[in-house]
Amino acid sequence: MPDPETPVPAVLGPREVLARYYQAMLDKSADDLADLYAEDAVHEFPFAFPGFPPRFEGREAVRAGYRAAWGAGTARVEEIKEIAIYETADPEVVIAEQVVTGSLPAAGLSFGIPGLLILRVHDGLLTRVRDYMDASGVAGARG
Image (cartoon, rainbow, N blue to C red; front, side, top):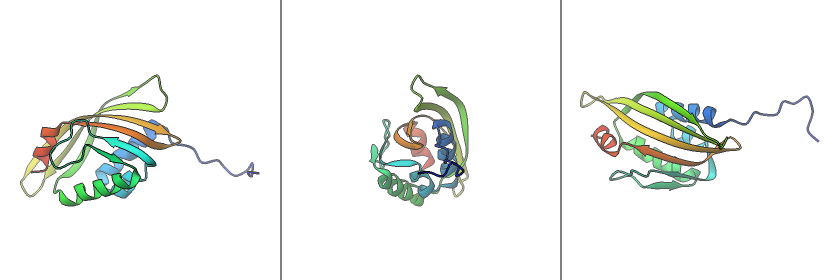
């Protein structure tokens, strides 16, 4: 029987998970990002760009995929500008319109990549992400 005096940990909602998602991106932390996902989560990239898979299946695939992408790239994410957050009729789903800005220090270039995220969060973990990034912007940011 649970102790009535022990606080029950709060389950994160979609907006809180989105805030942590953004922080993991800013920190380029594949571990922090992957830890937001359920073990069997799916992360899809409907506008996939060359050299990047169209989806990750499972938390560990997210971890490995972002580790590889962030380890190989020289781009530095400096800010994620939230344009709008849209609530849906489904309390587990939130849609985020954003622009990721950053730089390629070696080339002296900056970039802005618009995108749209559709996040499904169940029991505080991401179960499905549809990540619509501007593929040409990503290719430019990768040099």
